[in-house]
Length: 253
Image 1 (cartoon, helix red, strand yellow):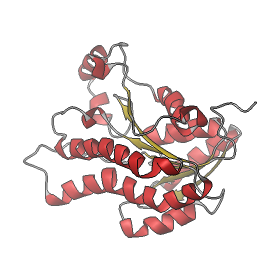
Image 2: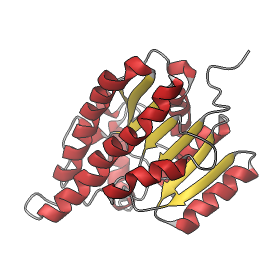
Image 3: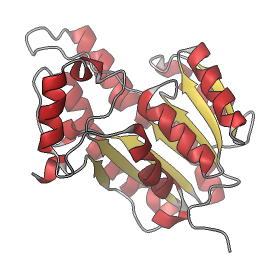
Image 4: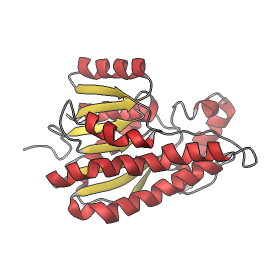
């Protein structure tokens, strides 16, 4: 009998897949059997990730594009279906965190953050939804944050975008789940990524953050594998509109 976690014959598109959370999620989906389209700006890193997935028996390709150009999202959605067929699973992992104090934020930096973190996930998903609806099955997985529910210093624009992602996820579920598309979000705690590099350069801060968790450590990228595969697979057929905190119990304390 086919496992409820098996993604064989599914096609996944992962944005922000050249590094960090998106890259790890692309690995996880490929290990579960999905054919994965990696999307990002850094061609060399994308190509290297594709090569590693293929070396481990997976199927992958990449698109080096700039998601911030919203006028290009329709073309990007079409290109994503060229190699393996129409997309079944979308992971919106691309993001930016400029870490600006409130009095430093400009209209341009605010718009840059909201566009990539909140607007692009909606408009890209909307381009892919008709193909999922035609199959009567789809998965959209957004990346929320600890800042979806609480405030951090120098995080006003980022926090606003991630609070928006939590509500966008619920609204996506309300709009599309009756047609077979489940929409959920993962809210990671502190993981070693490009966005958290300033935090990981401060050993004292890292120890403090680890102590804040119930488990007693910060996240490791492989911690993403289980929840990513679960939300992408038949195992989560009756789960939609949810934000799952993958934070070692950070928000439980």
